[in-house]
Length: 540
Image (cartoon, rainbow, N blue to C red; front, top):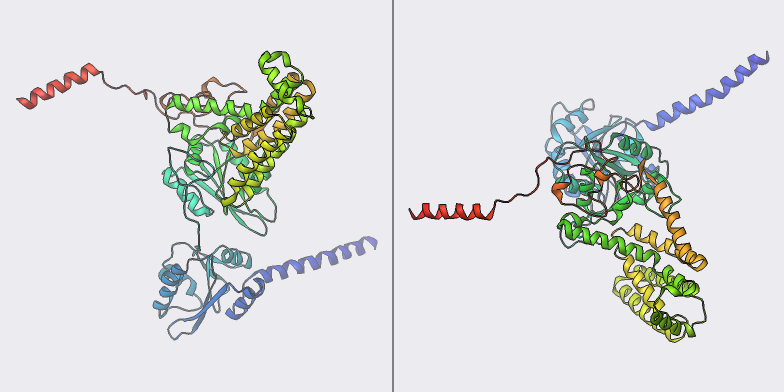
């Protein structure tokens, strides 16, 4: 008896769940009546004022009631007028148009828009409506025709504001994912450029597209990126930074492990090396993975200039990065512990400047660095008309006033200024921010142990960099592990005709170009003889 009652209780518990499931399925399906479907659409959208419903009649005797539903502002009104409404108004007198085959005939013979689909549940219907599609609902049919009419106001393609180049393409991505994908398609014209689209975010349902070149990209990395994206369960994705923080290998690090750019040529170049691009609707910044440490010091212009010029500029960037890291810390270590390493005349001048400063070098450097960071952040947040003026005037006035008040020495102002200028030489904004944070750690180590503290933190940083991974690829590749064949495009850039192979551990397809690509112009003597022979023939 107890087991019987237990089984009865379990059946009673399961019965409401079954009823609830069936009721949910019934609620999710569309109605046959047009008025009921339109009423439910209004209820589910909260009677929003931007929901447009256009009623009209179909059939021989206008016997079929129909309606088009769309959201004003995110659709192409001209496409709705020219290719949807006019087509329906002209061909609505078909004899065989009834409630059994209306949607099929409309999609096959009447509507002249390319992308159409059917929706038979409320989830698909509302998703299409919120994406900018127009819904054609016919009375007596429990499904709708979704017509692609996405449009609305979009920002025009403009020049990149974060990755400026002297030579190279000027166009940058916009906030429209369709425009961004098309810009890359125009560069890489191959059917092997594959795209995988998905929607992420329970509320925003943001369009996210993964782009890679089949046959060049590593299939394991593509599979891992696809897996991490599908595991994201969050309410909203407002920018690619959301996705970056949810799929990166390690979060407890100041260094970026996923590259981002707003230049189509940079995305195309990385795709051709075997990397994968992640496009997010609503942002002009595209994610690129896997990312390497040396990649953040490379600019698009490096590949358009001669190799010797590109190499010298790239080495200069790395040198500037080291200056932005350890310049204030070196000054603190020298003035606090290692005065004997500085020439006598210079150390006497520095001592004379610091004679009236009441604070130690560590407090002086920390104060100036924090002040400059405040001015830089204020200059970014202020309106453009006054932002640059406030930051420049503020730095000059505060620096001069601090020196005259005896709070800091003139040498410290020079060091901090050089450090700030050097930090702007890093092409990647994310890597420059990392240097700004780690700089304070170097200052603390220099104030505690001098040069030994700087070397200790530097070794810890190198060890940390070597431990990082970007989708399984070592972050310091090809420097650590050292791969000689892949060092053609790291700290130096060799000529294009020498870079026959793609980077290892990134791409499955290693060969980039064939042999014998070295330029070999004809000899000057041969050219002169050929010109003389041609002149003789012309005279004859």
